[in-house]
Amino acid sequence: MKTRSQKIDKFVSLAKADERRLGEATGRLSSKLSAEIERLAELNAHRRAYASKTQSMSNINSAHWKDYQDFMLRLENAARSQQQVIRECEQQLQTQRRHWLAKRQRLESLERVLENCRRDEALIESRRQQRALDEIMPNTSFYSGKTTD
Image (cartoon, rainbow, N blue to C red; front, top):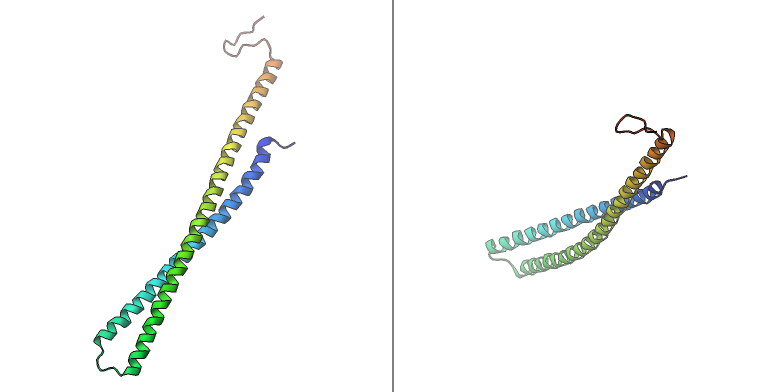
């Protein structure tokens, strides 16, 4: 027959696996957010580089100027889109972290319940063993080493 702690241990094992899975997913989302922020930084660096080139150019024909303006507009739109991607990723990460923290708290609670259960079972077993010893040697005093009659 399974003890209460053995039954609870199954739930703890499942909760650990679930918490670990959510923790890994949270880590992946955090890495994705970092990558998206890096992409935005690259876009902004390109935009600044091209903007600084414009200041050094002179005598540009109108077709080239129009192409340049279109390109800068595309970079600006890409940066805005990337900022939206980052906001969405941040929201997903916050939601994921809340789920992970809830699972983590549940796991910690289950672990405390398991520990209390094991402590109770150990105490019960200790008392059972003491009763068994008392039944075997009913007239022996543990402290004095003398028998009582």
